[in-house]
Length: 364
Image (cartoon, rainbow, N blue to C red; front, side, top):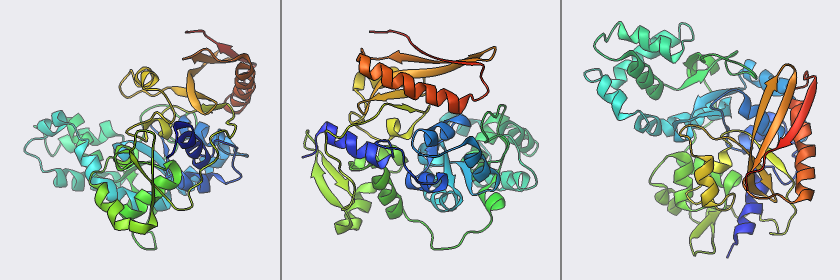
């Protein structure tokens, strides 16, 4: 039986958060099965908080060299992944992308075949990168009775679109432009990825976990059949409520009392959205606060391995301020650790600032 703290420490170990890892950025991205990338900066911060040595230039170079890309994957949300995963995982998740195309958008393209929209969109974005707005407007010339925004969304759901630099780089602003993964990355080699591979990758980065957790993270259904097929490649435990937890036989399970350092998680960090039951990382009450605004997941703070605060960063006239809003009263010793880690975060994110401050706003 695995306690909440045992599951917490297992998660932190697999997410490279018990101690900063010596892995290179591409190795870390692949180990983590990608990082959420709804905007340009969070993947940079997510790697900084996990790696022993990481510079902004390290990830920018991966993106400009096409070794890594931002592409819609799990739950139809943008993720930063290596080129191999962009080619291999995206076909497995095509149905997820299509299911996330809203009913309103489907209604507004009524009369237009989704496959034809995707084919027409491919022809356009493989000539030059398009923003989704530009793509919708161009497709509306062929389907004038359809809503351009809906056409753009339908093409995005039907195609493996990657965001091209400079829109995917640190500090980028404006609407991202897209082309297809095949056009940007070229043909890959090696055997195609399978859903079995995806489940094993998930457990390496997030396990132990239930089948429902796997489905919540990926957006895929029917993973119970995959688990049955994997058979003795997995082991099973139970949590404190008796739920079956699947895991890799060699998955790390640190002692529940292993010290966990203060960590700042980037916006949209995958750990917060990777489980049907996320109590191994935060209380249900705090989950409601963190996910209060649809489509927005703020930066969060780990104290003793659990979410204890929300953080934001503001800039004004050369002064950059990290504002920490606790969800609970944080002990003085942890405030000191968070202050020191916050100063390191500011030095990474704003090296040119004339002054850097870490401030705590009380809430309790």
